[in-house]
Image 1 (tube, rainbow, N blue to C red):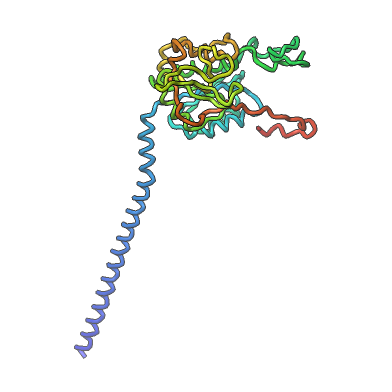
Image 2 (cartoon, rainbow, N blue to C red):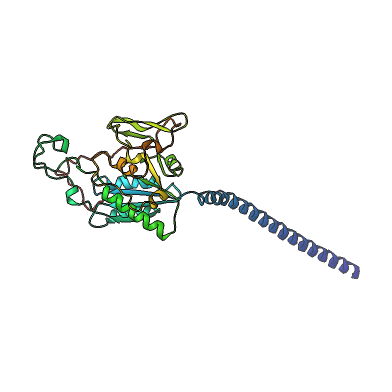
Length: 329
């Protein structure tokens, strides 16, 4: 009886030991699995974070870009600004200076800028009345008064449009550079109704003093732009209208180094420049001759910016079927 009881006790003890050992093994295995799982997740996280860190490291060495964009109230303004925003939000190290031709800042424009999540400055500058289109007194197509337009507003501006706003943008730019101790960067005058390839902004960052490239669908041509020799020196310009201009170039076709602007406190756009000469007058203050401008993108078989201009909408049914004016279009 004693031996049998001893054997039973031994069996029970042995079983308990097996349970304890088994439990310990399971716990150890579970812990090892947890560690392996954590290591795997950590590797996945590193794989996700590493490219971001590498991208940030590269972007930290990029020259900042400053875009100066004049804008004015019109039916397509919101659509144009949102389209431009969707492009710019993919461009690193960029500050967007948007200047409204308005007596007050628009809530719509501010909402677009806020939702775009870019670094931006939102300001305004009003075009003086004497620089705006006037009533047609006589029929004169050269002044934007075609037949039947007497008593109506001129279709064309006699003075270059956006001058006051771009000059305000230059003032804001100088203030930003001084406040933040920024000495290097590139400035581009980007209208809100053009279309821009992301590749363009990589090209813009290469500009030192002033750089130029081709612009598509401008000047009644497929494209305009510099013509270069084998050394990439500008020797002529591919333009149709007024090729004798010092710099026969569109606003979308050039950028200027920030240092060049900061070193010339009086540099601005000339409100009295003849129509079509605004860019040329501006660049003439920077460069001694048109051959001094750098050419970019000349080996490409495509353009990087288009002077598209959004078509003015026709609203012939609005009188009969009026829309809800509380809906912002």
